[in-house]
Length: 235
Image (cartoon, rainbow, N blue to C red):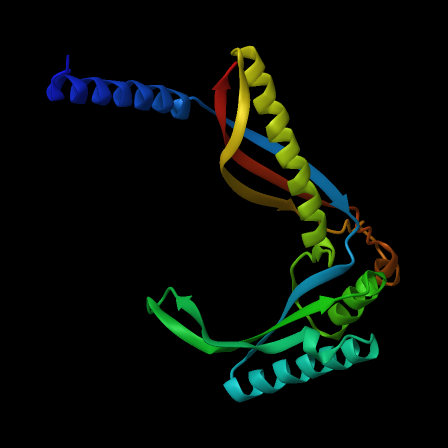
């Protein structure tokens, strides 16, 4: 006896729906974890930001004074063997110098302030102390703490990243076993990077001659983290 066409269609659709529901149930079972790791490397370069600030009634005189100090700084860097490509002296700011007159309740123009900004990438950290000592004596009056970095930082980050992925997998395995399942494929991975760069420690010295020996670079810590979503399969 032939089964009605509608009955066959209903049976097939029902089977497909059950199969889809089972697949959807498996697909919806996931576990999201975070993995972290870190690695260290000794810094081998430093970025130094410094400024020469000159005040004068004449803007031309202030510019000339700032330029003279800037030229002395470049000469010092040349003598230390710093490549000109690692020196940037192009940033300059000129602004009026005012003070408030309480009697007239008006601003009084005193002159002009010229600021020349100098950035240097130093690839020989053993010269950092000497550089700081000489540029401050030459007329640099604003100096930010050197920012230490490593030419090997990207390679070290990749080492930390690989370890972070392993950490994420280990975390996911624990969760899967605790819930009576097992891990499937990684469905998504998101990465992030946080690098903590140490600054050289400058001990207080009474004598300027001792500054050159007062820097200790420490270590650069590179941290990596990953967020991974794994499929969670029933046993």
